Length: 509
Image (cartoon, rainbow, N blue to C red):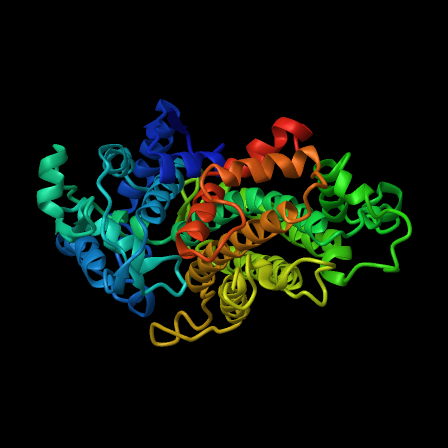
Protein backbone atom coordinates (compact mmCIF):
# COMPACT_ATOMS: atom_id res chain seq x y z
CA UNK A 1 0.00 0.00 0.00
CA UNK A 2 1.15 3.53 -0.79
CA UNK A 3 -0.22 6.51 1.11
CA UNK A 4 -0.51 9.58 -1.11
CA UNK A 5 0.42 12.75 0.75
CA UNK A 6 -1.22 15.91 -0.52
CA UNK A 7 -1.35 17.82 2.78
CA UNK A 8 -5.11 17.56 3.45
CA UNK A 9 -6.98 14.26 3.42
CA UNK A 10 -4.80 12.25 5.82
CA UNK A 11 -6.78 9.79 7.96
CA UNK A 12 -6.14 7.78 11.11
CA UNK A 13 -5.96 4.70 8.90
CA UNK A 14 -3.20 6.35 6.85
CA UNK A 15 -1.19 7.03 10.00
CA UNK A 16 -1.60 3.43 11.18
CA UNK A 17 -0.63 2.09 7.75
CA UNK A 18 2.60 4.10 7.63
CA UNK A 19 3.53 3.88 11.31
CA UNK A 20 2.69 0.27 12.03
CA UNK A 21 2.46 -1.60 8.74
CA UNK A 22 5.31 -0.07 6.74
CA UNK A 23 3.27 1.50 3.96
CA UNK A 24 5.24 3.78 1.66
CA UNK A 25 4.48 7.46 1.23
CA UNK A 26 4.33 9.50 -1.97
CA UNK A 27 4.09 13.28 -2.25
CA UNK A 28 1.78 14.68 -4.91
CA UNK A 29 2.76 17.27 -7.49
CA UNK A 30 0.13 19.59 -6.00
CA UNK A 31 1.87 19.41 -2.62
CA UNK A 32 5.23 20.18 -4.22
CA UNK A 33 3.73 23.20 -6.00
CA UNK A 34 2.17 24.50 -2.77
CA UNK A 35 5.48 24.18 -0.94
CA UNK A 36 7.40 25.85 -3.76
CA UNK A 37 4.99 28.81 -3.76
CA UNK A 38 5.34 29.33 -0.01
CA UNK A 39 9.10 29.01 -0.31
CA UNK A 40 9.13 31.83 -2.81
CA UNK A 41 7.45 34.08 -0.26
CA UNK A 42 10.05 33.20 2.39
CA UNK A 43 12.95 33.87 0.06
CA UNK A 44 11.50 37.26 -0.82
CA UNK A 45 11.49 38.16 2.88
CA UNK A 46 15.05 37.13 3.63
CA UNK A 47 16.47 40.61 2.95
CA UNK A 48 13.54 42.62 4.35
CA UNK A 49 12.23 43.37 7.84
CA UNK A 50 13.08 40.88 10.60
CA UNK A 51 10.67 37.92 10.56
CA UNK A 52 10.50 35.39 13.38
CA UNK A 53 12.34 32.17 12.62
CA UNK A 54 13.63 33.43 9.29
CA UNK A 55 15.92 36.26 10.31
CA UNK A 56 15.60 36.14 14.12
CA UNK A 57 16.36 33.79 16.97
CA UNK A 58 13.79 31.53 18.59
CA UNK A 59 11.61 31.60 21.69
CA UNK A 60 12.87 34.18 24.16
CA UNK A 61 15.56 35.10 21.58
CA UNK A 62 12.95 36.23 19.04
CA UNK A 63 14.14 39.84 19.25
CA UNK A 64 17.68 38.92 18.25
CA UNK A 65 18.23 39.65 14.55
CA UNK A 66 20.50 37.19 12.77
CA UNK A 67 22.75 38.47 9.94
CA UNK A 68 22.23 36.88 6.54
CA UNK A 69 25.60 35.13 6.66
CA UNK A 70 24.58 33.23 9.82
CA UNK A 71 21.02 32.21 8.97
CA UNK A 72 21.87 28.77 7.58
CA UNK A 73 23.88 28.08 10.73
CA UNK A 74 20.87 29.30 12.76
CA UNK A 75 18.70 26.48 11.43
CA UNK A 76 21.35 23.84 12.01
CA UNK A 77 22.03 25.16 15.52
CA UNK A 78 18.32 24.99 16.31
CA UNK A 79 18.16 21.29 15.42
CA UNK A 80 21.26 20.46 17.45
CA UNK A 81 20.29 22.46 20.53
CA UNK A 82 16.69 21.28 20.57
CA UNK A 83 17.66 17.60 20.30
CA UNK A 84 17.99 17.53 24.09
CA UNK A 85 15.79 14.57 25.03
CA UNK A 86 16.70 11.93 27.56
CA UNK A 87 15.62 8.42 28.49
CA UNK A 88 14.87 5.31 26.47
CA UNK A 89 13.92 5.57 22.81
CA UNK A 90 10.21 5.68 22.01
CA UNK A 91 8.67 2.99 19.87
CA UNK A 92 9.49 2.96 16.12
CA UNK A 93 5.79 3.24 15.20
CA UNK A 94 5.59 6.52 17.14
CA UNK A 95 8.63 7.94 15.32
CA UNK A 96 7.30 6.87 11.91
CA UNK A 97 3.92 8.43 12.69
CA UNK A 98 5.61 11.64 13.82
CA UNK A 99 7.76 11.96 10.68
CA UNK A 100 4.79 11.20 8.42
CA UNK A 101 2.66 13.83 10.14
CA UNK A 102 5.43 16.45 9.96
CA UNK A 103 5.70 15.79 6.22
CA UNK A 104 1.91 16.17 6.08
CA UNK A 105 2.05 19.67 7.55
CA UNK A 106 4.90 20.70 5.28
CA UNK A 107 2.91 19.44 2.29
CA UNK A 108 0.16 22.00 2.98
CA UNK A 109 2.57 24.71 1.80
CA UNK A 110 2.17 27.05 4.77
CA UNK A 111 5.52 26.39 6.44
CA UNK A 112 7.80 27.97 3.88
CA UNK A 113 10.21 25.07 3.50
CA UNK A 114 11.43 23.77 0.17
CA UNK A 115 9.74 20.65 -1.26
CA UNK A 116 13.08 18.94 -0.69
CA UNK A 117 12.53 18.96 3.08
CA UNK A 118 9.26 17.02 2.94
CA UNK A 119 10.75 14.74 0.29
CA UNK A 120 13.68 13.98 2.61
CA UNK A 121 11.30 12.99 5.41
CA UNK A 122 9.43 10.74 3.00
CA UNK A 123 12.71 9.13 1.90
CA UNK A 124 13.53 8.31 5.53
CA UNK A 125 10.12 6.72 6.02
CA UNK A 126 10.24 4.70 2.81
CA UNK A 127 13.79 3.51 3.50
CA UNK A 128 12.82 2.29 6.98
CA UNK A 129 15.23 4.69 8.69
CA UNK A 130 13.87 5.34 12.21
CA UNK A 131 15.65 8.05 14.22
CA UNK A 132 16.26 7.32 17.90
CA UNK A 133 13.94 9.69 19.77
CA UNK A 134 14.27 9.78 23.59
CA UNK A 135 11.06 9.54 25.59
CA UNK A 136 11.52 12.67 27.71
CA UNK A 137 11.86 16.24 26.49
CA UNK A 138 8.58 17.46 25.00
CA UNK A 139 6.14 19.72 26.84
CA UNK A 140 3.76 20.00 23.90
CA UNK A 141 4.59 23.70 23.98
CA UNK A 142 5.80 24.75 20.55
CA UNK A 143 4.65 21.28 19.65
CA UNK A 144 7.06 18.41 20.18
CA UNK A 145 10.29 20.36 19.85
CA UNK A 146 12.77 17.85 21.27
CA UNK A 147 11.35 14.69 19.66
CA UNK A 148 11.06 16.35 16.26
CA UNK A 149 14.58 17.77 16.59
CA UNK A 150 15.97 14.27 17.21
CA UNK A 151 14.29 13.13 13.98
CA UNK A 152 15.53 16.19 12.08
CA UNK A 153 19.05 15.59 13.39
CA UNK A 154 19.20 12.42 11.32
CA UNK A 155 18.01 14.34 8.25
CA UNK A 156 21.12 16.53 8.45
CA UNK A 157 23.39 13.50 8.88
CA UNK A 158 23.78 13.52 12.65
CA UNK A 159 22.07 11.87 15.62
CA UNK A 160 21.30 8.17 15.95
CA UNK A 161 19.07 5.65 14.17
CA UNK A 162 17.42 2.57 15.66
CA UNK A 163 18.47 -0.86 14.41
CA UNK A 164 16.28 -3.96 14.16
CA UNK A 165 18.00 -5.55 17.17
CA UNK A 166 17.18 -2.63 19.45
CA UNK A 167 20.56 -0.90 19.19
CA UNK A 168 21.53 2.30 17.42
CA UNK A 169 23.88 3.38 14.64
CA UNK A 170 25.21 6.78 13.66
CA UNK A 171 22.74 8.89 11.66
CA UNK A 172 25.25 9.63 8.90
CA UNK A 173 25.98 5.91 8.49
CA UNK A 174 22.27 5.10 8.31
CA UNK A 175 21.74 7.73 5.60
CA UNK A 176 24.67 6.39 3.63
CA UNK A 177 23.36 2.82 3.84
CA UNK A 178 19.96 4.03 2.60
CA UNK A 179 21.48 6.10 -0.22
CA UNK A 180 20.10 9.37 1.17
CA UNK A 181 22.08 12.60 1.07
CA UNK A 182 22.14 14.68 4.28
CA UNK A 183 19.91 17.74 4.06
CA UNK A 184 21.45 21.23 4.15
CA UNK A 185 18.85 23.47 5.77
CA UNK A 186 17.89 26.91 4.52
CA UNK A 187 16.03 29.75 6.26
CA UNK A 188 12.95 28.72 8.28
CA UNK A 189 13.46 25.00 7.62
CA UNK A 190 14.87 24.00 10.99
CA UNK A 191 11.91 25.66 12.65
CA UNK A 192 9.47 24.05 10.20
CA UNK A 193 10.85 20.61 11.05
CA UNK A 194 10.38 21.00 14.80
CA UNK A 195 7.37 23.24 15.46
CA UNK A 196 4.41 20.84 15.52
CA UNK A 197 2.23 18.49 17.55
CA UNK A 198 3.12 15.53 15.34
CA UNK A 199 4.34 13.21 18.10
CA UNK A 200 1.27 13.83 20.26
CA UNK A 201 -1.04 13.50 17.27
CA UNK A 202 0.66 10.33 16.04
CA UNK A 203 0.20 8.63 19.41
CA UNK A 204 -3.40 9.83 19.61
CA UNK A 205 -4.12 8.41 16.14
CA UNK A 206 -2.72 5.02 17.15
CA UNK A 207 -4.70 5.05 20.41
CA UNK A 208 -7.95 5.99 18.64
CA UNK A 209 -7.43 3.10 16.23
CA UNK A 210 -6.60 0.60 18.97
CA UNK A 211 -9.44 1.62 21.28
CA UNK A 212 -11.99 1.41 18.47
CA UNK A 213 -11.20 -2.31 18.36
CA UNK A 214 -10.70 -2.83 22.08
CA UNK A 215 -14.09 -1.39 23.01
CA UNK A 216 -15.73 -4.01 20.80
CA UNK A 217 -13.48 -6.63 22.40
CA UNK A 218 -14.65 -5.39 25.81
CA UNK A 219 -18.27 -6.00 24.78
CA UNK A 220 -17.46 -9.53 23.56
CA UNK A 221 -15.60 -10.61 26.69
CA UNK A 222 -18.27 -9.01 28.88
CA UNK A 223 -20.82 -11.19 27.06
CA UNK A 224 -18.65 -14.21 27.87
CA UNK A 225 -18.71 -13.17 31.52
CA UNK A 226 -22.51 -12.82 31.40
CA UNK A 227 -22.78 -16.47 30.40
CA UNK A 228 -20.12 -17.70 32.81
CA UNK A 229 -21.87 -15.94 35.72
CA UNK A 230 -25.35 -17.15 34.73
CA UNK A 231 -26.36 -13.50 34.43
CA UNK A 232 -29.29 -12.17 32.44
CA UNK A 233 -29.36 -10.27 29.18
CA UNK A 234 -32.67 -8.56 29.97
CA UNK A 235 -30.94 -5.33 31.07
CA UNK A 236 -29.56 -4.97 27.53
CA UNK A 237 -32.96 -4.92 25.78
CA UNK A 238 -33.14 -2.32 23.01
CA UNK A 239 -36.27 -0.58 24.29
CA UNK A 240 -34.84 -0.44 27.81
CA UNK A 241 -31.49 1.15 26.92
CA UNK A 242 -33.27 3.50 24.48
CA UNK A 243 -34.73 5.27 27.49
CA UNK A 244 -31.28 6.83 27.97
CA UNK A 245 -30.23 7.63 24.41
CA UNK A 246 -26.46 7.94 24.63
CA UNK A 247 -25.07 6.56 21.32
CA UNK A 248 -22.30 4.53 22.94
CA UNK A 249 -24.71 2.84 25.31
CA UNK A 250 -26.92 1.83 22.39
CA UNK A 251 -23.94 0.40 20.48
CA UNK A 252 -22.63 -1.61 23.42
CA UNK A 253 -26.05 -3.06 24.28
CA UNK A 254 -26.55 -4.03 20.63
CA UNK A 255 -23.21 -5.84 20.67
CA UNK A 256 -24.10 -7.70 23.86
CA UNK A 257 -27.43 -8.78 22.40
CA UNK A 258 -25.77 -9.96 19.18
CA UNK A 259 -23.03 -11.95 20.92
CA UNK A 260 -25.48 -13.54 23.39
CA UNK A 261 -28.23 -14.23 20.84
CA UNK A 262 -29.72 -17.69 21.25
CA UNK A 263 -27.59 -18.54 24.29
CA UNK A 264 -28.76 -21.79 25.95
CA UNK A 265 -26.83 -20.78 29.07
CA UNK A 266 -28.75 -17.51 29.41
CA UNK A 267 -32.06 -19.24 28.61
CA UNK A 268 -31.43 -21.90 31.26
CA UNK A 269 -32.15 -19.56 34.16
CA UNK A 270 -34.46 -16.99 32.61
CA UNK A 271 -37.26 -18.11 34.94
CA UNK A 272 -37.33 -19.22 38.59
CA UNK A 273 -34.02 -17.50 39.42
CA UNK A 274 -33.96 -16.10 42.97
CA UNK A 275 -31.70 -13.20 41.94
CA UNK A 276 -33.71 -10.04 41.30
CA UNK A 277 -30.93 -8.27 39.38
CA UNK A 278 -27.26 -8.60 38.49
CA UNK A 279 -24.41 -6.62 40.01
CA UNK A 280 -23.42 -3.30 38.45
CA UNK A 281 -20.35 -4.78 36.77
CA UNK A 282 -22.74 -6.83 34.62
CA UNK A 283 -25.93 -4.78 34.49
CA UNK A 284 -24.20 -1.43 33.89
CA UNK A 285 -21.84 -2.67 31.20
CA UNK A 286 -23.60 -0.70 28.41
CA UNK A 287 -23.48 2.47 30.48
CA UNK A 288 -19.74 2.22 31.28
CA UNK A 289 -18.55 0.80 27.97
CA UNK A 290 -20.92 3.18 26.20
CA UNK A 291 -19.54 6.25 27.96
CA UNK A 292 -16.08 5.19 26.82
CA UNK A 293 -17.38 4.85 23.26
CA UNK A 294 -18.78 8.39 23.40
CA UNK A 295 -15.45 9.63 24.70
CA UNK A 296 -13.70 7.88 21.83
CA UNK A 297 -16.07 9.57 19.38
CA UNK A 298 -15.07 12.96 20.83
CA UNK A 299 -11.35 12.11 20.63
CA UNK A 300 -11.78 10.91 17.05
CA UNK A 301 -13.36 14.24 16.07
CA UNK A 302 -10.43 16.13 17.64
CA UNK A 303 -8.00 13.82 15.87
CA UNK A 304 -9.65 14.34 12.49
CA UNK A 305 -9.60 18.11 12.96
CA UNK A 306 -5.93 18.04 13.84
CA UNK A 307 -5.22 15.87 10.81
CA UNK A 308 -6.84 18.61 8.71
CA UNK A 309 -4.73 21.33 10.37
CA UNK A 310 -1.49 23.04 9.44
CA UNK A 311 0.70 23.09 12.55
CA UNK A 312 3.65 25.49 12.52
CA UNK A 313 4.84 28.95 13.54
CA UNK A 314 5.15 31.35 11.85
CA UNK A 315 2.70 30.53 9.07
CA UNK A 316 3.22 31.57 5.46
CA UNK A 317 -0.07 32.82 4.02
CA UNK A 318 -1.00 32.95 0.32
CA UNK A 319 -1.19 36.77 0.35
CA UNK A 320 2.49 36.97 1.27
CA UNK A 321 2.12 37.55 5.01
CA UNK A 322 4.27 35.58 7.44
CA UNK A 323 2.49 35.69 10.78
CA UNK A 324 3.29 34.35 14.23
CA UNK A 325 0.46 32.37 15.83
CA UNK A 326 -0.28 29.69 18.41
CA UNK A 327 -1.28 26.85 16.09
CA UNK A 328 1.54 24.72 17.46
CA UNK A 329 0.08 24.56 20.98
CA UNK A 330 -0.85 21.00 21.96
CA UNK A 331 -3.91 21.77 24.12
CA UNK A 332 -6.57 20.31 21.76
CA UNK A 333 -4.85 16.94 21.44
CA UNK A 334 -3.58 16.92 25.04
CA UNK A 335 -7.07 17.27 26.47
CA UNK A 336 -8.39 14.56 24.13
CA UNK A 337 -5.60 12.18 25.15
CA UNK A 338 -6.27 12.77 28.84
CA UNK A 339 -10.01 12.24 28.42
CA UNK A 340 -9.44 9.04 26.46
CA UNK A 341 -7.10 7.69 29.15
CA UNK A 342 -9.82 8.23 31.77
CA UNK A 343 -12.38 6.40 29.64
CA UNK A 344 -10.09 3.46 28.89
CA UNK A 345 -9.16 3.16 32.56
CA UNK A 346 -12.86 2.88 33.45
CA UNK A 347 -13.40 0.06 30.96
CA UNK A 348 -10.51 -1.79 32.56
CA UNK A 349 -11.90 -1.11 36.02
CA UNK A 350 -15.30 -2.68 35.34
CA UNK A 351 -13.65 -5.63 33.56
CA UNK A 352 -11.50 -6.31 36.62
CA UNK A 353 -14.66 -6.40 38.77
CA UNK A 354 -16.19 -9.03 36.47
CA UNK A 355 -13.01 -11.11 36.70
CA UNK A 356 -13.10 -10.97 40.50
CA UNK A 357 -16.79 -11.99 40.54
CA UNK A 358 -16.04 -15.02 38.32
CA UNK A 359 -13.42 -16.24 40.79
CA UNK A 360 -15.37 -15.79 44.03
CA UNK A 361 -17.56 -18.82 44.84
CA UNK A 362 -19.86 -16.63 46.95
CA UNK A 363 -20.72 -14.52 43.91
CA UNK A 364 -20.09 -16.75 40.87
CA UNK A 365 -23.34 -18.73 41.20
CA UNK A 366 -21.93 -22.22 41.44
CA UNK A 367 -18.45 -22.02 39.92
CA UNK A 368 -15.53 -23.55 41.88
CA UNK A 369 -13.26 -21.19 43.85
CA UNK A 370 -10.89 -19.37 41.45
CA UNK A 371 -12.09 -21.79 38.74
CA UNK A 372 -9.52 -24.24 40.11
CA UNK A 373 -9.47 -27.91 39.15
CA UNK A 374 -8.83 -29.05 42.73
CA UNK A 375 -9.31 -25.98 44.97
CA UNK A 376 -6.70 -25.90 47.69
CA UNK A 377 -4.18 -27.95 45.81
CA UNK A 378 -4.79 -25.75 42.77
CA UNK A 379 -5.09 -21.95 42.84
CA UNK A 380 -6.69 -21.76 39.39
CA UNK A 381 -6.85 -18.22 38.03
CA UNK A 382 -6.45 -16.52 41.41
CA UNK A 383 -3.29 -14.62 40.55
CA UNK A 384 -4.58 -13.66 37.13
CA UNK A 385 -7.00 -11.41 38.99
CA UNK A 386 -4.09 -9.99 40.99
CA UNK A 387 -2.44 -9.03 37.71
CA UNK A 388 -5.64 -7.45 36.45
CA UNK A 389 -5.95 -5.50 39.71
CA UNK A 390 -2.36 -4.27 39.40
CA UNK A 391 -2.97 -3.13 35.83
CA UNK A 392 -6.21 -1.48 36.86
CA UNK A 393 -4.45 0.37 39.70
CA UNK A 394 -1.74 1.58 37.34
CA UNK A 395 -4.36 2.84 34.90
CA UNK A 396 -6.00 4.82 37.68
CA UNK A 397 -2.70 6.56 38.38
CA UNK A 398 -2.15 7.18 34.67
CA UNK A 399 -5.67 8.60 34.29
CA UNK A 400 -4.65 11.70 36.25
CA UNK A 401 -4.58 14.42 33.57
CA UNK A 402 -1.24 15.73 32.36
CA UNK A 403 -2.76 18.69 30.56
CA UNK A 404 -3.47 20.65 33.77
CA UNK A 405 0.18 20.56 34.81
CA UNK A 406 1.72 23.43 32.83
CA UNK A 407 5.25 24.61 33.64
CA UNK A 408 6.66 27.83 32.10
CA UNK A 409 9.76 27.66 29.89
CA UNK A 410 11.99 29.80 27.65
CA UNK A 411 12.41 32.69 30.09
CA UNK A 412 8.59 32.97 30.41
CA UNK A 413 8.06 33.44 26.66
CA UNK A 414 6.43 30.01 26.62
CA UNK A 415 4.58 30.55 29.88
CA UNK A 416 1.78 28.05 29.31
CA UNK A 417 2.45 24.62 27.83
CA UNK A 418 0.13 21.71 27.07
CA UNK A 419 2.02 18.69 28.43
CA UNK A 420 0.43 16.87 25.51
CA UNK A 421 3.38 14.56 24.92
CA UNK A 422 3.08 13.28 28.49
CA UNK A 423 -0.68 12.87 28.05
CA UNK A 424 -0.16 10.81 24.90
CA UNK A 425 2.64 8.71 26.40
CA UNK A 426 0.54 7.66 29.36
CA UNK A 427 -2.45 7.04 27.09
CA UNK A 428 -0.37 4.42 25.27
CA UNK A 429 0.31 2.69 28.60
CA UNK A 430 -3.37 2.78 29.54
CA UNK A 431 -4.38 1.24 26.20
CA UNK A 432 -1.78 -1.53 26.54
CA UNK A 433 -2.91 -2.23 30.11
CA UNK A 434 -6.56 -2.34 29.05
CA UNK A 435 -5.72 -4.93 26.40
CA UNK A 436 -4.06 -7.08 29.08
CA UNK A 437 -7.01 -6.75 31.47
CA UNK A 438 -9.42 -7.78 28.72
CA UNK A 439 -7.17 -10.75 27.86
CA UNK A 440 -7.41 -11.90 31.48
CA UNK A 441 -11.19 -11.53 31.46
CA UNK A 442 -11.39 -13.50 28.21
CA UNK A 443 -9.33 -16.36 29.66
CA UNK A 444 -11.33 -16.32 32.90
CA UNK A 445 -14.79 -16.11 31.36
CA UNK A 446 -13.97 -18.82 28.81
CA UNK A 447 -13.04 -21.22 31.60
CA UNK A 448 -16.21 -20.31 33.45
CA UNK A 449 -18.33 -21.03 30.36
CA UNK A 450 -16.75 -24.44 29.94
CA UNK A 451 -17.44 -25.27 33.58
CA UNK A 452 -21.14 -24.70 32.86
CA UNK A 453 -21.24 -27.78 30.59
CA UNK A 454 -23.42 -29.45 29.48
CA UNK A 455 -25.06 -26.04 29.00
CA UNK A 456 -23.90 -24.60 25.68
CA UNK A 457 -22.86 -21.01 24.96
CA UNK A 458 -24.27 -18.72 22.28
CA UNK A 459 -22.80 -18.89 18.79
CA UNK A 460 -20.97 -15.60 19.35
CA UNK A 461 -19.37 -16.57 22.65
CA UNK A 462 -18.63 -20.05 21.28
CA UNK A 463 -16.62 -18.41 18.48
CA UNK A 464 -14.66 -16.42 21.07
CA UNK A 465 -14.03 -19.61 23.04
CA UNK A 466 -12.95 -21.56 19.95
CA UNK A 467 -10.42 -18.88 18.97
CA UNK A 468 -8.92 -18.83 22.45
CA UNK A 469 -8.62 -22.61 22.62
CA UNK A 470 -6.43 -22.55 19.52
CA UNK A 471 -3.68 -21.07 21.72
CA UNK A 472 -4.79 -21.48 25.34
CA UNK A 473 -5.86 -24.84 26.86
CA UNK A 474 -9.07 -25.17 28.84
CA UNK A 475 -9.73 -26.07 32.50
CA UNK A 476 -7.37 -28.45 34.28
CA UNK A 477 -4.70 -28.67 36.96
CA UNK A 478 -2.54 -25.64 37.59
CA UNK A 479 0.07 -24.82 34.97
CA UNK A 480 2.29 -21.86 34.09
CA UNK A 481 -0.31 -19.15 33.51
CA UNK A 482 1.71 -16.22 32.21
CA UNK A 483 2.29 -17.58 28.67
CA UNK A 484 -1.43 -18.26 28.30
CA UNK A 485 -2.35 -14.72 29.29
CA UNK A 486 0.31 -13.40 26.91
CA UNK A 487 -1.08 -15.53 24.08
CA UNK A 488 -4.56 -14.12 24.67
CA UNK A 489 -3.13 -10.60 24.71
CA UNK A 490 -1.32 -11.21 21.43
CA UNK A 491 -4.52 -12.39 19.76
CA UNK A 492 -6.25 -9.21 20.90
CA UNK A 493 -3.35 -7.11 19.60
CA UNK A 494 -3.68 -8.89 16.25
CA UNK A 495 -7.38 -7.90 16.21
CA UNK A 496 -8.39 -11.55 15.79
CA UNK A 497 -11.25 -11.79 18.31
CA UNK A 498 -13.69 -9.38 16.71
CA UNK A 499 -13.14 -10.98 13.30
CA UNK A 500 -13.79 -14.46 14.70
CA UNK A 501 -16.99 -13.47 16.50
CA UNK A 502 -18.36 -11.47 13.56
CA UNK A 503 -18.38 -14.66 11.46
CA UNK A 504 -21.38 -15.70 13.60
CA UNK A 505 -22.94 -12.39 14.64
CA UNK A 506 -22.40 -10.24 11.59
CA UNK A 507 -20.75 -6.80 11.94
CA UNK A 508 -20.49 -5.47 15.49
CA UNK A 509 -20.33 -1.81 16.48
